[in-house]
Image 1 (cartoon, rainbow, N blue to C red):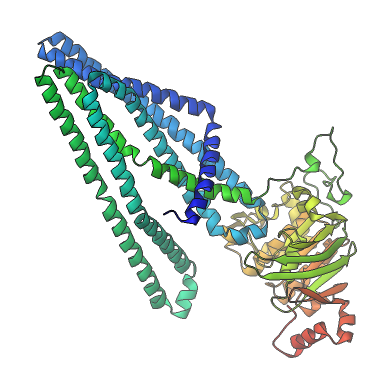
Image 2 (tube, one colour):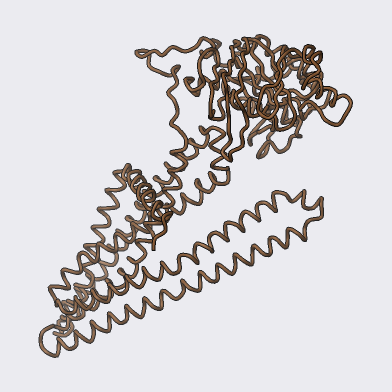
Length: 612
């Protein structure tokens, strides 16, 4: 009996399979080439047994000249079939590779466009698996289907020929072929649970190996080698047992199929001998029938995998399209719209008027920020923000404070438009976030996360992430204005210092400096800073804050602050607790009230707790 969950999966898999087929058909020249090459190969392959049977008949008549000609024909057919098969396989591989490439690039672009709540549902490991393993599995399954389709075309041509020769032997071959297909289908259904367990255990083993190797420093520091080695040992043994069970069951299929194919050929040989003895069938026709029966039997044995191949391809396609559907298509950027259809854009979202390479001396154009009853809930059900309302004038410097888990980072991400709200509205410059074109919003809003994220390349490459047109001279001037020329001189090759994956090669503080400078290069109108100087020492913090406020003069700034000297630079503080705004005011006003902020201030000065 089919489970309800399996019944729900099948329509989705069919839909994914149809959408994947439509993607394949986009490459019409390659599809046409594969079809023509397959038809040509099938027609010429069908001529092979005919030529061999003619040679047998000629040899029986002692017609040596005809035998030699037919032998040469058989050789020529084999060469032509080999050439066409190479061409067909090349075109099929190219078709599959182009389709997989299109889907992979689309998947990567979708992952780059997704909001942060997208990654709550689809973690990085899932996106990586879809872009690599699932697409590879999809490609191999599609290629296997193309191979099977070509083989099935051979049956379409050979069956009428066999019926002409003798309908009784054809019926016997068809019955044996049907038994082969039923056996392979039933066998695969029996072995698929074991194969699924083996795949799941292999995935678990890969996760364990990744986790153990990624945390190697912690393991060695705490002496946990024996504990984690035992964990890896148990997981490896479970994966080995499931693989042996799956492979052992799968190894029984081919002997059973070979037995049935042998039975079909034995029936053709025995029945053909009886018909020859009765004078109802010639020797050459009988030999042609045996060759055709052998080809059809093995093709039908392979055809038993069609359902499995189809389901694998459809399931992989469904998982891939699930991610593509989870990310909305990119909004058209009004700045890139044709002149005949102008779209009004806020003045602060316009592209800078300065030419490429130039860099404005001042900060971005300030924008007004308004939050009305904003609520945010994460994918796991955690309520991060509750009915938050704020009105911040353009050019304000506002700090978010609160104990750990109060919702500060969540509020910053909501303002940046990185999370989809569950209620309320955020407006930037009077325009709701959902009405902002993505490209314009990113030019206007600068966001510096708590954990610095850099990419492989040079320091200059990372600084140019938002403005590729900025020159090295402009970057150097910015760093000097930030009083970080000493920091730059400490890098091995200055701006051309090469970084590894994730910015490896720099200390945590150096990575944070690059992250902050990257936001300053952008010159946005609204700057969101999540504890921007958390990884810096006191001297670097003081230098960078002084220069940062100078460069951001006039811009609206919202930052999470935990140091008292940083708080003093702000115009207003917003105190959060359990996702709610509990206090607002200047630092002096909040201290005089002797409320939430005053208590946290006292903890910071007198006890172990602090404002963050």
